[in-house]
Structures are given as structure tokens and as C-alpha cells.
Length: 334
Image (cartoon, rainbow, N blue to C red):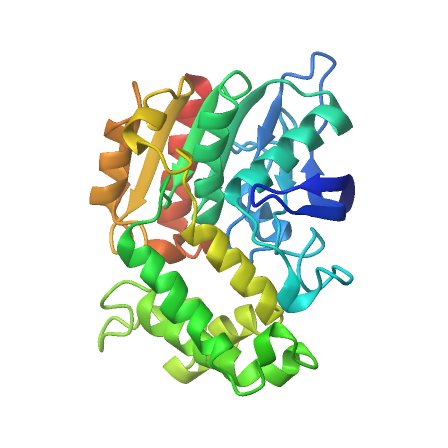
């Protein structure tokens, strides 16, 4: 993991974060023209390494052809976060951050570190997809293509409620929370486990646990309890609770229109755009993804019939992987 020093970084909320940093990974080689770059922002609590499964020789995201950058985002270490920032902005005192802050920091990384002024593609899943819309609206002259996968420009009321009630409330309601100034992350693990269990119930598609289907079996788990422990708890427990909350709040506030008319903002997008929705995804249902695509000039909407819904992010199904690869290959060839 490499670190880009942002210096004293002024956030959208007006606070200047001292000595801010942005973590990132790269794959492939930047060509002399500096025009073969792809940016692949990450999802909530997903380290950049989590996206490596979508990169490979002969695949659309081919490091032999493209220079692929996987940036972190605020709230996700080693990028500046509550858990790694010194006082006075440590832990519960970390300032509010926005998707726009992430994108502005990433733009600086491209320009100052690599001299990149053109991106062949910006793509992302979930919170990463929120960032793709911000990129397309804020820096249209840089972005040639956009792929929003299982995401939205502005989360729906249901998704905002989910981010608050499923992720935030179990943590802030833990007896050890102490306004975010707990002794250590382990002190709040009761709240983190409750959050993991709530996610296990609400995020997979209906039928995921249904008798006779039990899709978790095909993933190598022996029981629902084993799946919850080794998949959901294993995903959430390593993360600092303050970091999770900062990311969840940032996702809730995502809005490339900055409080203005969303349809008008999406209408300014000039990048060739594809919006991908997965059946069974309660976070970003295909019907909502199709509505977003209809607001973008020339955008295509692609619905993927999937047994895994929002969990398709993790490349759990070979069919999902082949379908997404096909969509990306077609987009990059256009």
C-alpha cells in the first residue's frame, strides 16, 4: 500500500484536516502519454486489496493494458480516519467527510503523483459507485467512461435508513461507546457483532437462507451460524467503530448535486456511462438504477440476474463475474 500526502486538506465541511493522507494501490504501468489509467474506488470498509479479484490478465481490467489505481477513502485506514488521526481530530472528534472530499483527494493523487489528466474509466461498487457519480459530475473533462455497479448518485431513503439503523445505531448504542472515545475498538465489539448480525439479516437477497436453497453452502460454510461468524463478523470486527460510522455517514450524505437538482446534475455528465443493477439488491434495486441511468445522456442500464444481489461485489458467483466482465469489456471497447 502506497501513501499520498495531501498536506493540510480542507474538507467540504470547512474543517482543515492536518497532514491528511490517501492510501492507494496500483496495477500495471502508466504509458508515456499518461492516457491508459483506470480508477477503481472502493466500497464501505473494503480495503483496496478487496478489489484485486476483478483485475487480471486477459480480463477487462487488464494490468498489461491499463494502469489501474485503487484509491482508499476517508474513514478507511491507511487513508486519514478517526483511528489513525492524532488529536484534536482523533476518534469521536474526527470531522465530517463527504464523497466529494474523497474525489477531490483522488484527483490530486492523479494530477500531482502521476500527471494524469484523463481516465479511460472510473468504476465502483456500492460506496465506490457513489464516488463514480461525483467524479462524472465534478470532473467531466477527465472522465471518459463511467461504470456505476450496484450504486446510486444519491442513496434512497431506505438505504439512508439502513446505513443509520443497521450500521450506526448498534455502535453508538453500545455501553462502551462513550461518544466515540472508547478505550479501544475491542471494547465496542458487542455493538460491532450486533451490526454484523443485522447486516447478515438485511443485506442478502430474500431466499438466501431459504431451506432448499441455502446459498451459503456453496460458499463453503457449514451452517448459517458459521456463515455469520466467518463471513459477516470476520468482515466487520477488524474495523474500528468510529471508522465505520464516518464512512456510513459519508455514504448517507452522498449527493453529486450538492443539495441541488439531482436530475440536472446527472444531465451534465458527458462520460459514456453504464449503470448496473443486481436483482435482489435491497440497497440499490435495479428499478432505481434504471431511473438514474435515464437521467444521464446516452447512458445504458444493465440488469444482472443474480442470486447474490448486493453481495455480488465479492465475486461470489462465476456467472456474476462473467456478466460484469462482459459489461466492462463492452464499455471499454466503445
